[in-house]
Length: 165
Ligand SMILES: C[S@@+](CC[C@H](N)C(=O)[O-])C[C@H]1O[C@@H](n2cnc3c(N)ncnc32)[C@H](O)[C@@H]1O
Image 1 (tube, rainbow, N blue to C red):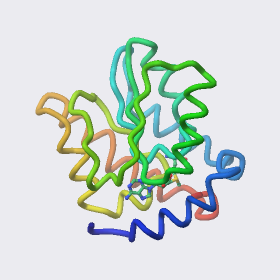
Image 2 (tube, rainbow, N blue to C red; image 1 turned 90 degrees about the horizontal axis):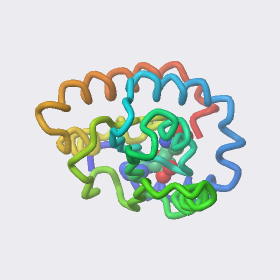
Image 3 (tube, rainbow, N blue to C red; image 1 turned 45 degrees about the horizontal axis):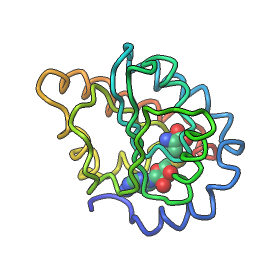
Image 4 (tube, helix red, strand yellow; image 1 turned 180 degrees about the vertical axis):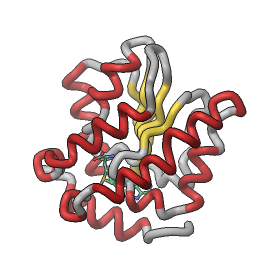
């Protein structure tokens, strides 16, 4: 893996999963901006890269609707467990959760867009970004690239560091 140590992320979010949404609530406007910039359409599939507790799922659901879908990928079992709870509580049937590092995840190849929200760790990993981008076909690829990595890096630069999770 090029980029940060996965074991550090695992340890950080093992401790940090509890209360994560509340602690990072002030980053919600950056989350909204990140989702808005994807310009999602009903019926689309979105990879929520390092989805954590699924804090962005409802923003995505509002845009893609029940015909669309979300593939949430995250390394941390604790963060994903919170995500699963959220999915169950909402009764969403169009969300797939994968516990894996983004670098190695076997990401389905039918998505139209990828969300990198507050994913500073992952954006530093060339292997992770390449794995996500490699899942897009030629038609979606240009849009996915434009909409995700550069803009999300720029957005991340604006997030106050103490809100980064
Ligand atoms: C700051 S949280 C962001 C969660 C969510 N996207 C949000 O908007 O709040 C960062 C997440 O990245 C995950 N993560 C860090 N490195 C990862 C990697 N290499 N592969 C998969 N997930 C990773 C962590 O487990 C954590 O859930």
